[in-house]
Length: 189
Length: 189
Image (cartoon, rainbow over all chains, first blue to last red):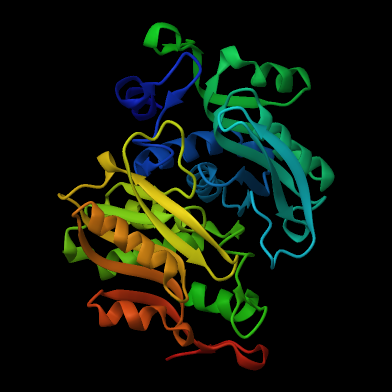
């Protein structure tokens, strides 16, 4: 994960002691090579788990889920934040965004997430864990099996990972940020 | 493009004479192999054009833009439908969605789309051309050069492509649907 680490240290911007901006290579402009590296790394960590579906949430998770699914040879499914008029029957969960200060419903079509699925959830950030709670709730509603979670950047000091790991969820985070204090990115080794 | 064509004919659902649903492999659940095929095809059609950036719009365009950018060895940029609080200076354009009956603003950060860029726009559908007009407007605002447009499925009978081609824009559509009447998908050969 040298390319990712290098980009984080050189290009990520500390907006505040809570917010790290990575929109020059992950969630606005995207470096496809980094996405391939990330996808291959998640795939290698979950290679033996017989994953059948990679689940994420629009929009920033899609590129990550695509390269992961490609490496694992599975389809991917992205939860939508608006219910399309053509969706049919769906599972829905509400998540609260601290960054945007709003609650949104996320949904997946029932036909694409079933009790036969062994699910790997992936996303760009793990902060307080709200999005992840919503995604794990969708997996539970579908009676599918949650095998684990792959996160590109976990902000350890915001606690979302702690709660989910405490609940027995396997979380693999590629970059663990221990603090953004004083405008500096401190990584956990 | 045999895999794509086969999926369209076997899995796409005709919702009405205006709407084709491809959410089992393109815009909800995604088959990564189809995305790779699509990206390689767009790349081969624009290989000699010295593209510097692939531009799309969240969320369904991202997977397509990623595989295209990977094949062209460029970054990709996806326009956002909500203005993030951390975005900085941006270009903005309004687009109207007939499917959703609403107008949304789309935006890109000024620093990631500049007058040095030779831009390939890609998206999943071309219908009336509203999203595409918004994206071309962003390219114009940035004083970047629009080299062409890659579309997975163009609904020829909705006229969006006609208007843009008339304005001199090169549009490459992989699947051209001439009609969805009577529940049937008719392709232009």
